[in-house]
Length: 199
Figure (cartoon, rainbow, N blue to C red):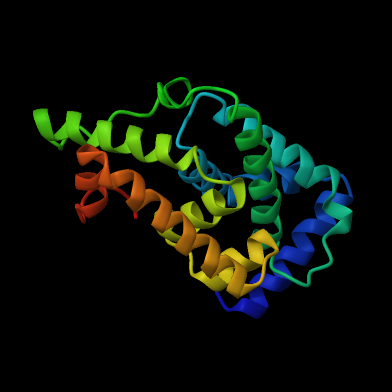
């Protein structure tokens, strides 16, 4: 699908939603749910509040749909809302110890055997504990770029920051994580392992 066709489809879908067509609202949710869920998970690393956060994102999307100006794609506009929701969640979580935040991470896939599965789970737990020490801007930029695999320019657009500021945030996050990993062999091995995660 070309960008122009997708752009027109977005406009038509939003118009239908604004006209109160429930089928259009369901379609918008279905089109964007998986991407938003994946982004929230990669930023936050926990499924505990995921359904509530996903609902919060789409409540805000539908409440502010009239403000979408079609200057950016609908997906990018929704991603900005998701990042704001994640940002607020990070701020709320900062008072909790990292173990509480990370206690419910999904187990690694069954095809990773025994000790490797335990090591991978512990590596993920320590990565998100380390991410919890970062500022929300650095954590969000790092998660979107390094874990979610988005280009820096897209991360800058979604977060409303300049490309330079985004690069600096990712660099600072990397530097902080590697400093923490210097004193944590499990985290160091996880960060050095190319199969260690979705980075």
